[in-house]
Length: 463
Picture 1 (cartoon, rainbow, N blue to C red):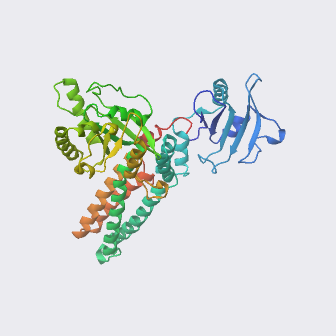
Picture 2: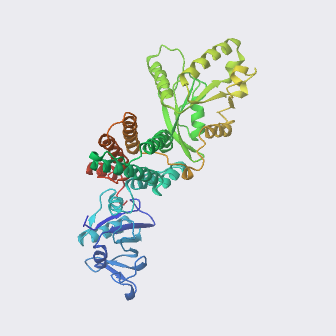
Picture 3: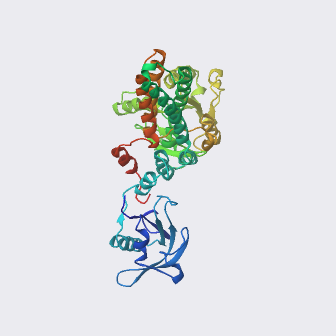
């Protein structure tokens, strides 16, 4: 990567200021061609690294484009590991365009998406999982996803992977050394120690793999299905949670015929609430399709909010029907987190049956907001994330998940081969496969160019 690259690193469009980043071996000579410092003492070709220089950018006609501040970095002590200049200019889109034109006509080229971070990876400033964490940090929309991205950026998962690889490399080296002394029938690698190591690695890999469900929920938003009979108040509850009229609310049963989704943040975690069609027997084709989708959404959700209209408890016949309905819903929900909500409690005239009280229902009036705080607290109690930045590594990346799953299969094969007394060359093969898969997470083995292109191509230009 010999080219010098440039790009706008702040958001596109007009603003108070903008930042244009230039990186590469020729960045200082290129910028020096059209930059005039306010003080002659501050010639950037002679300026101290990690300093700021105030001056003007002059175009090819001798006209001032803007007064700017240059932040100067000398490689390898920079984000990319190369010489870097950050040009802080006024946020006019015209000024941004003119500065980029000056840079490209004087020898720089526009950067590709993610090229700055790709150069940081290639120059050893970060490993591959840390580079991916940069994109996650930029995309973080809540406290939880921000904490996990920071943990990965600091090398949380990298440290675990590197430690596992080091121990495996030590053992495979001893096993392969044995192959050089096959005729002497010597054993350098302690098989019992290897067995203990494999068991421990299996535990670590299984733990990381199981953390993906949590990580993906935080990254994508915890899916929450709002279900119940028609007119139980599901759409009203969704509007209350979102603080806007997202769903149509009428007295007509069966208004909601398709799933309506939106996200909110509760205690720093995003929850994706899904308002579903009311569950009932119907001959309406469109409504029946909506009800079918309701049960599909239940299957896809981590948490289910089941609303019951409190007025139904005022009828003995309805109370019997409710017990049957509730048993059916609980069976459908299975092991998912579940919150029972008695809505419209202001209309309740009879007491709630003990069988339902055992489910610890929340009393609400979704129409006026009564019970919302208690509902939010109950939702948060199911997902006690704590300080995610201080916890063990949480996997959020599907590429990492697949590599970990393949690694676990490799380790299980080694374990099986060890138990069956297989020769060292066969054990070595599976250990090497595990090392390859683990290494692909952090980029410590040959990483296919297509993989790199796929990873960094998803970054925004300027990062």
